[in-house]
Image (tube, rainbow, N blue to C red; front, side, top):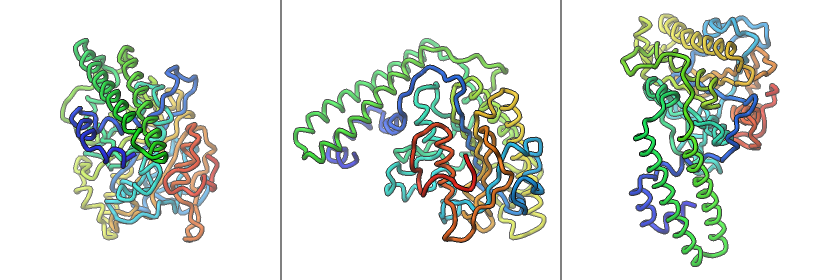
Amino acid sequence: MHRIIKSNSSRRQFLRGAGIALSLPFFESFTVANPAAEKSPRRLVCVGNHLGFFPGNFFPNESGNDYVPTSTLKPLKDHRDDFTVFSHLDHGLNGGHRAVQGFLTSIKKEEAAGFPAKNISLDQAAAEHVGSSTRFPSINAGITGGTDMCWTRSGVHVQPVNNPASLFKGLFVNSSPIELEKQRGRLKHRASVLDALRDSASALSLTLSVADRDKLDQYLTSVRDVERRLQMSNEWLARPKPRSPVAEVLDEERQHIDEVALFYDLMALALQTDSTRVATLETGLGFRTTELDLGSYHQISHHGKSDDRIGQLQIVEAFLTSKLSDFISRLKEAGIFDQTLVVFGSGMSDASTHSNRNLPVLIAGGGLEHQGHVICPDEDHKRVPLANLWLSVLQWFGSDASRFGRSTGTFSPMEI
């Protein structure tokens, strides 16, 4: 596909000039599904924290269900039977902060070209499966820019929404007639660009070899997928958004600690109203721990084994899991917890050493038979790739994928 586009630079410039250079990869990553809502659809939530979790605060010493909860897990005590913690899982990546973005992909962006689906993230692979069944195939929220953990099949980073008011508006505030007309105009313009691209490709096919025509046919298939996605987007414009059961979220300055709770609330509402079935939340490097009367998060994450700094990390990490606990409670109250799988963790383990090995990983809900603390093999020749767990999660979601990123198979230490 890329060689075909490169061989006609004027067409590439035309697409960029038409304002859809970034939109094409976005639309191509979705398949079209039946817009009728399923009776009990499955949902996926992925939560990532850039600076990881101090291993001593996160991992229990014991395996199984009878473990003694660590300081980071204690806030989840009300849901102890409903989640599993995993030890010794990672993607084999190195690079510290630069490798955190591989948490949900198993692949660093610099290596993406060598994989069939590039560095698509778990959430976006699930969003592809959802297609147009919901207004939003996924929603992505983040504090201070997030962790760069969400990527499309085209290798495009999915920027998180940083403003809770903007997310609320997108979910629950209907556009004015003038805004709707502008949106329809943009969709119509994109459709006309695709028409021109298809006509140009048809003419180009007459000059190509059989092998290149096959590649062109594959690209045109993706163009038709884009066209169907555009059609569904236009149909969603005609449907009113659900009415919010809570007061409008105003666009005002907030503390980060308040935004975490608010984003969780909005994600729960989005899932409950079936506005989406895939949601992510990222806590970025600049999360203001000073609001918890602590030092700079980045500074205390470089603890150097200082008891004082590790103690401060206990407070930060317990705060984050307390908000996760509240979120799980809301999903239970809404009656959708057993149909929702929550992934929680980081592409960083111990930020003090910039380690990307033995990542903190927890999954909750999904109607699974949870096993407390699963200790996976630590020996290099026996290690289980974290991507295997992601593949099993994707299959639980309903995808027929047989591979994900660096996976070598499905996850064997626990049935997902």
